[in-house]
Length: 251
Image (cartoon, rainbow, N blue to C red; front, side):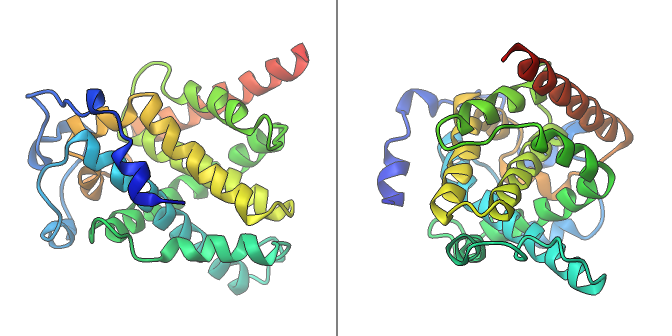
């Protein structure tokens, strides 16, 4: 795929960001500061517009996926589990997943942000893994219907608004679908489609604009999952599962 061509096809009409777009230091309640994150942030540009957010999204999601895959595989090996993502994967799909750690051609900060998101994703996974699994097991994933199926559930995440907890939950949902695809023996090309689904959804649903207006991807470096965030993730997972159940009954 011509990565550079994809970037320049980003519509100019969507590149306008509100003049009130916050810098990283004023993200407010979405990102609670603290810890040693500032050291990791020092080489990350202080402001991002929507074009930059869009350019970086695929690379960030790929590094997020690799971080989650690496952590999950390591835990599986330590506990002798046979359900790791690589246990039943096709070689081309596994290679595609491993390639997610490749250097991103545009921004050096992409791997750092992807790893941080992966750490947050591990926290969400530890609490809601079964709910994610039940939801995804309820989906009829096929190449023909995969995007609309994914988007229908993902829209439930943002039905009442956007925040960082929901953005990370979206990435977790995308990762869990990707892992399911791998375990079911789908090809690496289908895995690439899942990655594209997440990137396209973030653009089409104006999530990229929100991210740009709230400090860019770098703002997530100081984000911490608070109790309200846990509550939000739990509720949207419940709503998503209900949506899948109702959709299944109608068919």
